[in-house]
Image 1 (cartoon, rainbow, N blue to C red):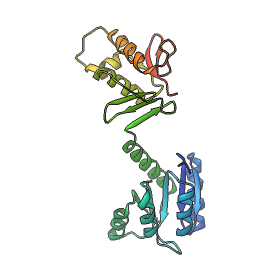
Image 2: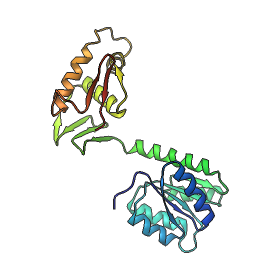
Image 3: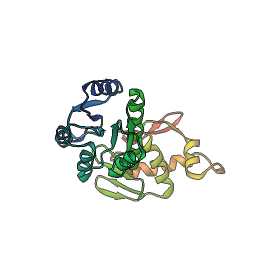
Image 4: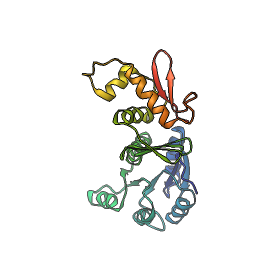
Length: 230
């Protein structure tokens, strides 16, 4: 099964807690799967992989710690532990098992949603070294400075890569020429800003299938350029 980018698994044997958490998460745009036991949680975790798990430690069949351990055997999906256990030893034990965060009962549902979003932002950054566009037609490896177009390696100059990297990380943001100059050369650059046009032309020749009808590096007339997130 494909992992949903908006699906969250909420595991707790207290129905009212699950209902409240579900309500707040759904208001924030998430799809919620409910589980009221450890065994049910593991089955749904496997059949409907979520993007994050909210896991109570006090479950009626399998302990939350054991559920966390089993989930961690084959997955690095973020886990937020939810429990009434407040002493430092229990918290450290949960984190050592692989939990990404720890929320104690009673808790604010709004704060829990904020914790969910913070964990997802952090884990997303940790796994976003490779950007993919148009069903892998264009791949940009931000860590290894590699670009692939239609399965073939593309050679960019350092300045071309800086421009492409910045624009692709913020699709549809319009960049003025002076902003791109700063990205390439810093504040002390005194050259003519049309040099950016040359860089853009070279990038298009290397990553566009049709340079006359570009999909990725688009011109915003009178302003600058933006990256099309097709």
